[in-house]
Image 1 (cartoon, rainbow, N blue to C red):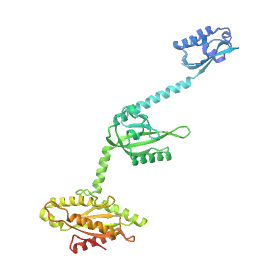
Image 2: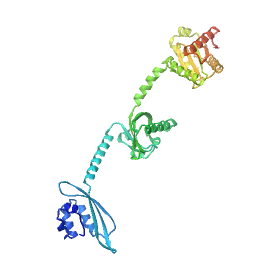
Image 3: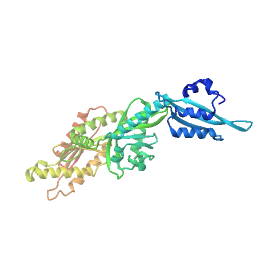
Image 4: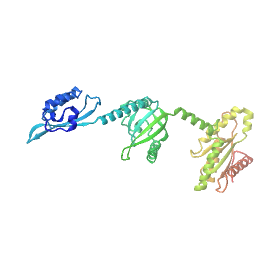
Length: 393
């Protein structure tokens, strides 16, 4: 033994003066008394006899009550190119190993928790690449682990549409702006077989020490049934139960928005107020069931003959309304088209059915009630002119 420090003497429990007279083999025998791992002892014995440039690194426990853990490095040294022995460094890493065990335990507890919750737990990168999904998520989306890990969300659980891409990008931007907050969003997702589900996601960003976004932690819950109920309630609140088109309440809401836009951007909008001629006679002659049949069929007929952008609603009874985004001249063309389509359509064995239509174009200085009132007066003017007509201001 050429050199040792006080800590080494303390470790093996031998007086410093005695160690000076020890051979390496006696040192090894002494160390055997304090090291409890036989595999490490075998390595130690072998290391000191090896003439290699390898650096041998091992962790081992000592037998005293403190149960300390040491990290050993051993490498050969030479004098004039001749192997003379080895240099050993022992470093007490007990605290580090203790923290490591605590960390491993905490990680295991976290993983056990993640795997036991009845929710989808997902870790993914900002580019959409999936890094982790828990057991519940795999079962929910019906994927095997190797079918989803490393793949993009767009290849697996998100329907690849422009809207979904924009929504995802928008959510990532919002996360970047609010790094301390959970960002909530609803997404339509798909499983392996294309079945669609609505999922409510809670998203939290994870950053490295330099502040770079490295992944997003998302926790999802199936929201499909609640979404269907919510949509159904919204539909009932906004649509006419008999015909399925917008009801008066929803139409007024949309009309208010569109008149405000018209004032702001100087857009043309026109209102068509439609009344089915002699509808009372149909009810009195054939009964209300046939009357309902006429209203439903009429709604479908008109829906097929207007643009997707036009807003069509049941105003009340046998009266209907259309808000079209055009000037009075083109609105009149639409009205005449509807008159012709309805009068030429065969409503089963019923007599010919016609409509009277009043059309008004929106004036930027009038309120909604005035706008509707002008269309209503023109509709009655069309009726008084012989029905099956269009009247404009």
